[in-house]
Image (tube, rainbow, N blue to C red; front, side, top):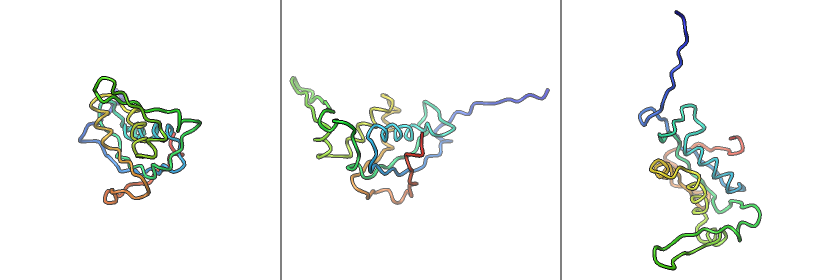
Length: 151
């Protein structure tokens, strides 16, 4: 009998091909950049995407200080943390965090879009964010990606 049989191929650590991608954040909107970077870290742009495996790429983001926040978010968006002591809730606006550490704004946005489990923590380690156009991963020969071409 002549029939076609299609098998679903599930990726694993041995079959995953990871690449290094370079993203320039200059002039990009924070949320749109973060969602596309999270998709690249997760591997959703690859045809062999498997939900429970780290099949995404390593992503380098440069020029994090030139990110754009729409509307009034520099003053109104707050990041809240707790010291662990009674009355230890601390808050910081996006503008204050941009002055102190612009890379952390992108890191927090991307981390919030990744899974909240061990896989998400592993995926987050594949992200490198730098202030300025210089980065320490020249040896990996990253491929420059234009985010406007991605869906």
